[in-house]
Length: 122
Length: 328
Image (cartoon, rainbow over the protein chains, first blue to last red):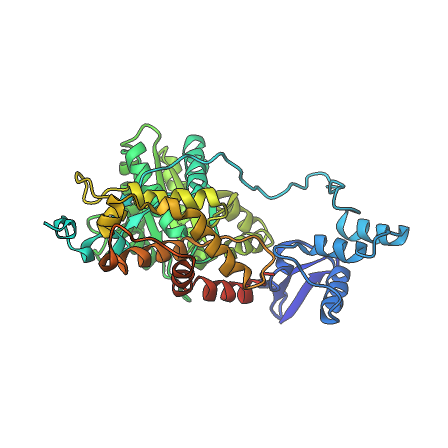
């Protein structure tokens, strides 16, 4: 078996057999599978979590976590900003994420709820 | 005659005792709005996902009841997906024939015949309504394998040729979303599945607001059973207290604060969401275990609310969620 992955996105790994035929996808545990992220983001956050320097918040995406981790000291140096831009394409939380052409956010739904009042007996 | 002896049925026969009732919540209202949108636009691809015990399956049943009233001619079926290690096309079609209500679902015949029966039956049922749609809720959809999605896709495509739209609505836990992204990473085949069945994500929530919580309590004070009688759920179990003005809705703040206190004791920073399972269990215990203590002076104290919540296993289940989902 072979494992194929991209350094820029290790939110999943492709599993291939000895002939290079695709077998399946290996997904990491929560929250790593939630969002594409680089091996650098994973390694740094993993190390910081292991050392007790960082904790994920509820439903926090790897990109947001990396930004929070890198900016927790307050001032953001140019090199930190560059790293954040390269790894998450967003330097601060308030800045809209930069998207490449053709890239679309996943469909999330938002609707006004229907006011329901009836209790059904089965 | 004592009012307790005037109950039209035994306590054990009441839907609250048997948990045989469906109650609306804000999240069900949002879910039903999504279902209506899907019908209006003939869009297949709705995913309803949420944590366990939040009441997704009940929401699905509630939506079916509403659809039966609002669109009596649109056929709706619920398929409960099974975990299979080696799925078999024939068996899968038999299960679908059974849930859509085909009279000969058990017949021994070839897979091709089963497929054709399924397509014909769904098309016939859908043609009763000018919208020509068939709604198929698939519960525990994360158990479906890519092969099974392919089989549903075959049915979907054949129905399209008949001018009928199959609207599968996938219901499950957040693994469904993982599955969606895993499919997308699988190339065009995966994309074909996602674009047909997994396009829109709708998160099903627990009770997050006090307003929603108090409204739900109010339904026990107003819902009637048996139909045609004047016995509300609360009145049925606590007739004397109800006669003296006892209403669950009036205890909304006390119960909400008791839930909040139980939750805060777990030291979770995330906002509280009460899973429907533990909300209804608390109220059901309150009613069914107190019917013998009924009196005009019956009331609830903070301690009794805390005890009920503890015995509903709300705290124990939330601790489990904390461990399993990394809640902080």
